[in-house]
Length: 350
Image (cartoon, rainbow, N blue to C red):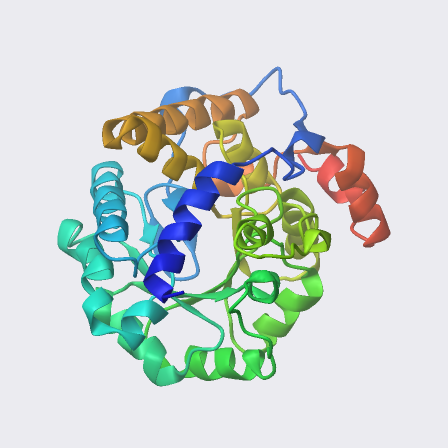
């Protein structure tokens, strides 16, 4: 099967498999503040990841490209949405265009439609420094995502089977590209140990890409004759991953993603340690079912609702929202306890 056909299959299977709120964020509750001493007009939602300033903690996360006109159309729509909402945006893996120049336009369209926006290029951890530089140049990108997708590759019929030296390749890319590098999981979460290794080689931003959103094991299993069902429930939930990374790895900018669908999901992710949140499958579903304007309206509603939540808590900034006290229950509590993450640290903040 061609790489372009595979890209289109991924889009359709992502819509079909959907998202089932397994991200663990429903185990998180805010402690009510009866005296927030603030108003909606006082709330500011601009944020920072690494050196990048963002006007919103929401960005359109990596989805597609490299599948001809269909993926070009999707990327064009999301670039227009990003421009309208002043959101950062990432493209899907550009390896298709690295290997076939005819696919470049399906990615370049993002910069064409949003000339002044913040755009992230994207490649897998198999990429060389030269390929990374080409991906960045293709989009005049402000940052580069390097995605980690071991489980997806193992389930993918034609996927990679050798993952040696990925950390060494990432280290070289961090040293030699001129834009910030974001290392991103694709739906299976990141442990504190993995993130510490990335920090040790110079990575300053991670997207934990937690379990609970688009499930690439299920997607790739749809393309297999014999299913690897044992990988369908594999991973660290978004909530658990955010909590253990934020508590155990200091000085790292964290992006929360993996099944985030609501303003409350966004607020909880930030309170668990994220500085920004990536949304992909949820926006894709709205776009495919209801069109571009529906996504624009949804983003406006998410922004309004987030400011209301922050006002209720007395958090006038993203940094203050990160310090709100939380109560953690259920499977997330169990996971964090066994992973030696101090629940009390989240409980007793003020």
